[in-house]
Image (cartoon, rainbow, N blue to C red):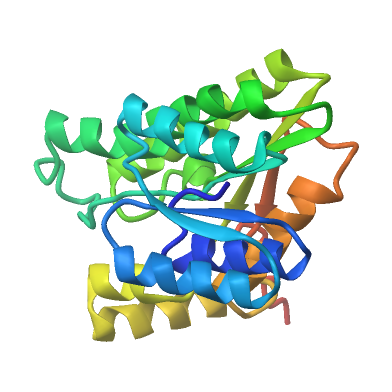
Length: 250
């Protein structure tokens, strides 16, 4: 099961799992046509896939998603909590957000993964895995807004708590990317700013690049399926942006 799977990392994750023989539930909130297209791409890989509408900020929707999975497959092996929300607001302006903005973003980015995990846990057998798509914003307090950065910090803490309490039956980890190419950021900041931000991130990163949704999805898939020794880990996959470039010493 992959939340927020109509576009971006969620869609790439759906395709990644389908290519490896997993049946996939493609969750979406509003982008029905895109989600149906992703589900069709998964079916083309030879697996069963279904697109199911649901807002992870609503507990009843999360429980309905779990019920659909139960009726179709009886169990869930992997949950990727990829649904995310933000508002693009400059951190230089402390009046750019209000309490309602924080509540809305936390509802999707923190409450959503909690509710979705709670709904799925009864369907997971020994060896089940949850991966929360977080962000380096939760470590260094940067990003699209104060609410976004704070929500990712909270998601990191939630990951630790769930991992500790769901062990040893279920592993729970978080993946923390840096900048990810794609329309989510482009639509949020505009084309001109997007190009400037991308160039800045790539220039500052040790690997001198930014991530694609497919690269992040492959890393999340590895964390979910193959990283059997890992639980409660906040795995940074940021092209070396936190590490940075070496200083020039001449």
